[in-house]
Amino acid sequence: MTARAWGQAAEHTDGPSVLLGALVPLTRPGWAEAGRHLLAGLDLAVREVNDAGGIDGRPLELLVRDTAADPERAAAAVDELAGLGVAAVVGEYHSVVARAAAARADALGAPFLCSSAVLDALTEEPTEWVARLAPAQSRGWRIYADFLLGEGRRRIAVATQPSVYWASGTRVLRDHLASRGGTVVELDAHALGPEALCDALVEHGATALLLLVGHPEPAVPIVRAVRGDRRLADLLIGAPAGQPEFGEWAAALGPEGAGIPFLRYLPERFGPLGERVRKELRERLGEAPSFVAFEGWDAVTVLAEVLRSHGTDRTTIAQAWPKAAVEGTRGPIRFSRTPGIGVWQWTWAPIQVVDRDPTDPDRFRPLHAG
Image: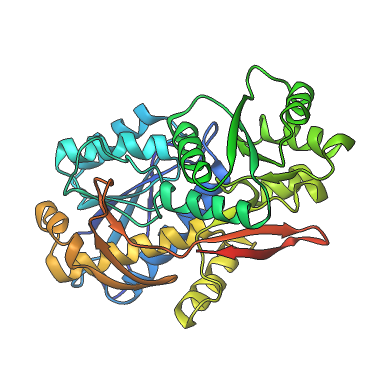
């Protein structure tokens, strides 16, 4: 699926649609389940905007493009959507893909509100055209490192694959832990099979293994190997990138996938708005919504308010990022400039470290908040 239109006009809206482009991973090798949740949040918000009268009486229409986790495909989609006259582009889950989309949006002068990607360097240079809802990787992963230290885990191993995203995360962890008595050793998940990786963990005396790798391969085989190795019975397995958030993880690993802490961008408790949206999303998805679904809803809701208040001209939209003030599902959303980050950033979305309860893998346990 490469193109799709969502968010039909409510009966009381009229006039030409205000077009909103959406970048979503819907097919492999993209994380399609994350894409499905993201799209559910985007679509629900579009329909609610239209039920409330649209954008000054005009319906909001979502033009969806499947990125399939391909940066070149995402950049081409931004080109196409800009040519179709979208007021702005929204979405994307994968950080490396979002970076390509942000670069193209900046070059074209097309506003892009990134919902879910966390890579700090979303753009090479500061830009007025791009804003982001997800917290920057440096913030979230430092909070995760503090959780590890609080658990007494100081000898950290990371199983990693070549990627700007994984390399950035490793650097954040190493820098933060080094000043607090922790160490990080990198293990190449491509060069080492699961059994050899277990041997390396024993050799290094690791007290925690972080999965900075793709799902299901090689994450699932690594978890199974570590869980089955008696030498590693006391080892904590972690996944800061959030792989255990989704049902595919639980379906693949069952009880073996529980007790693996990960980062989740949700508050400890929802307010009335978040609770209402949570129920709506659950009905649409047929399962508990992930934090990615809430990011999608918040992104469209922010853009709708900007469009109502400042109009549909692209330059005006980009100029409105620092003026936006919107109540989101996870708290009040405002954008500001953050040192070291070249885009307008919501500072900050709530961050939790959670895991799946080993006694009930469908239940999430909050372990730490930042």
